[in-house]
Amino acid sequence: MQLEYENKRSEENILSHTNKVKLISATGFNSKNKLIQGDNLSVLKALLEDYNLAEGIDLVYIDPPFATNGQFKMSEGRANTISMSKGDEIAYTDTLIGADFLEYLRERLILIRELMSKKASIYLHIDYKIGHYVKIIMDEVFGRKNFRNDITRIKCNPKNFSRKGFGNIKDLILFYSKTENYTWNEPKMPFTEEEIVKLFKKLTPGGRRYTTIPLHAPGETSNGETGQEWKGKKPPKGRHWRSAPSVLEELDKKGLIEWSATGVPRKMIFADESKGKKMQDIWEFKDPQYPNYPTEKNIYLLEFIINSSSSRGDLVMDAFCGSGTTLIAAQRLERNWIGIDKSEQAIKTSQKRLSEIPQTFFSVFDYDLLKEEALL
Image (cartoon, rainbow, N blue to C red; front, side, top):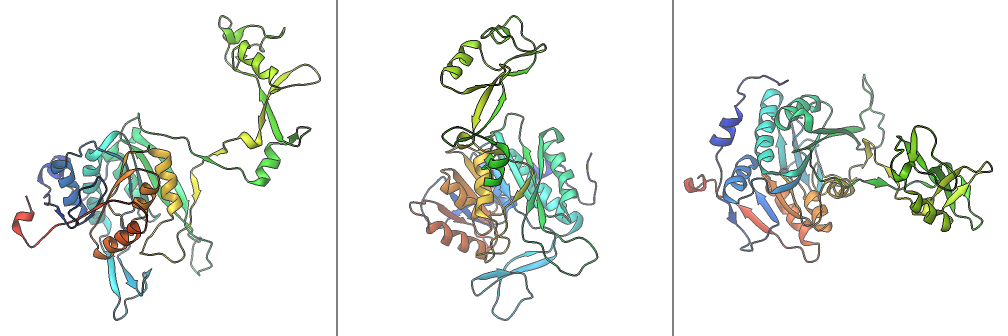
């Protein structure tokens, strides 16, 4: 299933006829970490062909324009979208709408896909007004089989604006992988005190909270170790022990098995040893109250994504890097990174914030659009 609209280019045309730029180092320092000012379509093509990065990116997060038909400004160091005043600087404009916006995004996604490694994932941040159309574009570019999640992100506190409709406190993140063999580090969220009391109702004599789980699981394996008798008991019909009898014996010696009054064994699980609960598809990472740049996202949101879908030393890319939050999160978590943005204000803000992190090394690139030789 695909969207059809005017001026939709073929993938072959996008890959073979997109102009690339010659990147010019503004720092003279060569680093895996790159902050690049320029139109990301041409920059992506250059990274693909001139920097040998085909299948070299291990994780992508992008927060592209939302087709709002608005202007975003910088005013006295604060970012907002209020109408422009004298002396205010435009951070960036978001004026593409409808099919023009969808094709703009699709072209970039196709190049991003070519840059992604086989273990890579992409998280695309978008809003509820255009997101359902973008989902179809993502299906087309990455394949429906590689769709992983449609994540709801709670972005702010409830508001009481007068409108004929429900209040909007969320946007969405579309999570896709390049292949089925993508990096996945199962994320866990800590239990609240209320959840601990509710889920771990029992107490040891020393006051440790715990609960118990069955020692058997569905599936009958009568010929294997886990189907054998242990302490004179066999697992119930149609089930098998979760561990071999020798392992169960060790657990019992360590006092980690609780026996009921009727002689039924169960494994003890302690609250203070639990890694937490499985993360669901509704996330509450609210935007900063006083952002450095329009659309700046919560740093913990980016750290959560990077921890979940990459490993130390991997290469993370944000092709709409804005204030550099993705890059900062990647730096903190010992990943390499590439950030791209067309806005001079974005690059300045990113550079300043990155420079405040001790021992952060990165190269800054630009290109000269006035020179014909810049277009190869």
